[in-house]
Image (cartoon, rainbow, N blue to C red; front, side, top):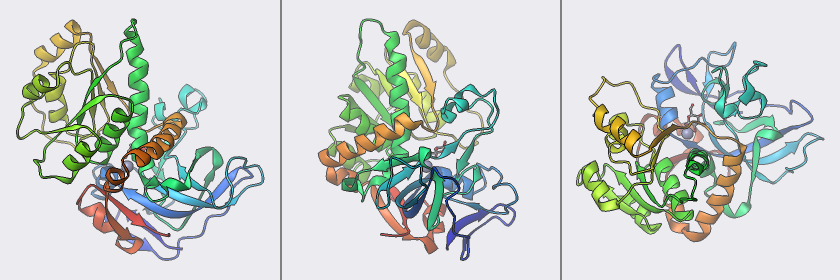
Length: 363
Ligand code: BGC
Ligand code: ZN
């Protein structure tokens, strides 16, 4: 079968025509026919050799792709919750094997402390840009057929869901039952817009703060879900804060550290700032540390980083995407702006265009 791979030694992206078909590996494993795979900034960084990890042991290539929607075609005899014909989204990260890693041993490899976790399509495990995959049922999340067309957005949504679950957990520190209400989303890419949908759906007033000026498709989606859209070319972070009022929550989805720390300056009283983007390497830049530290202390603020996602976030993402799709069908569909056949997988990886690009492998 075909697979789309990155060869680090020869720095190339290639289609492998005869990648071996996977077989069920245990009584609890599941085989999926891959339908769609989303492409994101992480793939772009891997393919431009900025965010690099070795391919699987003994392999000279890494099969790419970590945002996958598949259809179950075979299950081991001990698989309970999935059957052929079901749709499923595989999780990305697999635990390290150190007995002392409490998070991995507890099934929370998204908090792995040794750094020896693996990620399918990213770090030491082949990914999903191929025709069939096999994995343990434990890592497969069932998806309802009603969201078949857009379910490939579940994995990027899990980033927001984990951030939000953590944010609400942290804000339990405000002991009188304070509910954060005003959120600012940094960045209007898929992770930002899906986060904005999750925040709107949980009742937040949301302002999406991003670079591009209107008219802009991401601004249209923001407004369609009842969020405000502000271009950073038209308003400084101080002006943004004056418009929003007390900023209770910032959800960052740009990977632009300068932009993020500029907005950290205007986080509100008792506010929480959630960082999800992994920045590229740029020269160090100046930050107003006195203002930031002074605010963090005097306004009881919190800064939280979050990566990857656990089972809870995957389940919430499936439920929420189904709700978003019912509430804002066009806005959700409009997130997917480009569709490519497997043979052309390198195009959307090498060049970002539109909002979300996906590779369609089967219908
Ligand atoms: C993926 C995560 C992964 C992270 C770091 C993101 O693009 O969605 O699952 O943990 O990259 O590798
Ligand atoms: Zn991704």
